[in-house]
Amino acid sequence: MQPLDILSNLPTIETERLLLRKITLNDANDMFEYGSDPLVSQYTMWSTHTSIEDTKSFLRSLTKMYKKRELIDWGIVHKSEQKLIGTCGYVEWSMNHSRAQIGYALSRKYWNQGYMSEAVSAIIDFGFREMSLNKIEARCAQENIASARVMEKIGMQLEGILKQHLFAKDTYWNLKIYGILREDFFDNLM
Image 1 (spheres, rainbow, N blue to C red):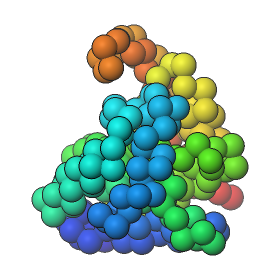
Image 2 (cartoon, helix red, strand yellow):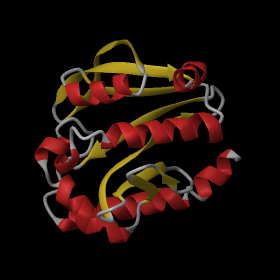
Image 3 (spheres, rainbow, N blue to C red):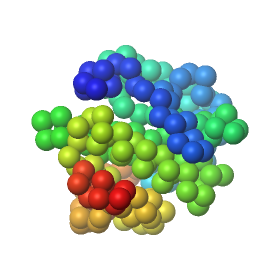
Image 4 (spheres, rainbow, N blue to C red):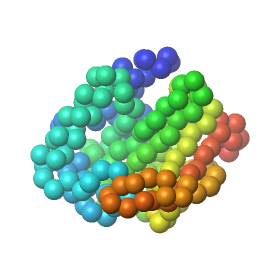
């Protein structure tokens, strides 16, 4: 699959319990449900949604990014409930260096049940197989133990801590940076 094909027509990915698909304006109510939870947005770059209009505005911006071929972000749908429960995707993609960075968010109702590890593992597999990536990275606030656990569970290795690397929500954040190489990912599958 060519990069522009991926960017112009984001494919759906199915896992055992989840469906990863393009996010639409029809997801507003489900997204608002978790986007309005301050514990979900605590370590994200986006602010807690205070109204359904915040969510709709966010979704409209995602739609524009899809159209401009600037976004590789999937909605995470719980298959048996047919409900959007989060998002995961590539927040940066350096085609020249065959490297990308992932990001994700999940409704608190679904925390600690392996859903995010399942979704992230699927998009990492997609990244290595379909995007021809050599390395995939992820970052989280140093205090975000749950996100670090997801990265470690799927085989990513801690590469270091970026001191006061990001200024968000009126504070400087130390970020843990994790990474996984194509060869290590496929070695772990065997």
